Length: 426
Image 1 (cartoon, rainbow, N blue to C red):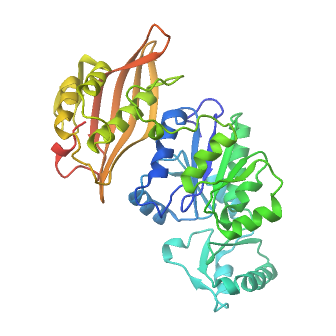
Image 2 (image 1 turned 30 degrees about the vertical axis):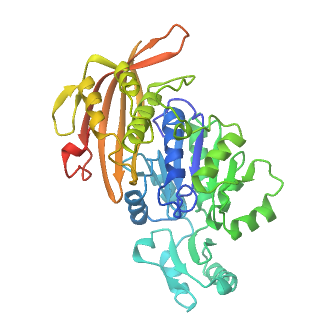
Image 3 (image 1 turned 90 degrees about the horizontal axis):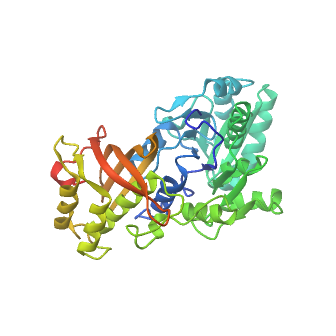
């Protein structure tokens, strides 16, 4: 909540499974396109919120499987848990709200009388969420009967059916939409309500998000029938809600452009990232482009020519140096020269490079410190480093700001070290 001193330019609140994450895309291309767009244009002055039905356990499993960015805020367990930052600090005020008219023991007792309900795994049972599987044909009947029973017991609950099989029972004040409304209220009280909020979803448990006043909304092209039906019945005339023509993260990128919320051309869609001239350049642009080029170089998706090597050296100061995560230090120009020998070594392989949490901090009129996490993956193997870079800025004759790398220091992220340090070049 405190990372930005002013209202966020944009806050994206997105479901994960089949919305931000496309489980039918083994290369994760749409997600990687979004990642590059976010770190290039938005991270420094905007907020990323993941709103998922997953419990913390399953959420962390997904983070190990997919190239997800680190969100500023995480809403989990269908809106019953709100946490902040990389440390995932819980919101105690939200817990107090959910405790009103909620008694988990009574819910467990009453649901045990319905043989149609099958408990989900223990990890999905949370303090303010009890989750079951139920056959689609019996869902409406069970929901109505169960709601009546719990009401008779003096509870005020919300029953959400989604995905054609999942039934979640929450306090009435919970849910993805209510969690977002709570966040909006907190931001408003601090004078930092985001200038625009874009909500993104694909299933029934996302429907509430689209009901929050003032938000823009996108149902991705692969949205499930239950969400499309809700939209037809409740929001078909709302011009702020669209059904995208692209799947998952691609639909989110499409919506940013449709609503005019900011740039929506991902750097991954730019052919020549080394020589691209971008307006309103900030140090984050340089970090994203450098690592995108590095991926393409190793995948042999750019030409193997000295012009590129010269261009990279041109943005590295002759006396600049690089500290490898192993502790070895060498001149930046030597590191650039060394990439000649690895051209195309990942050609035809599922090799990807992405950066996360790119946060520039200006420390003088022409000097910036940029901290970020860099990831490399090849098939099932993943490595990452915590990076600190020092860059200086200057302006060309045409007024375009140019950034020069002075220093890059990397340390292994805990548990993600490369098996062979020599395989991690820069």
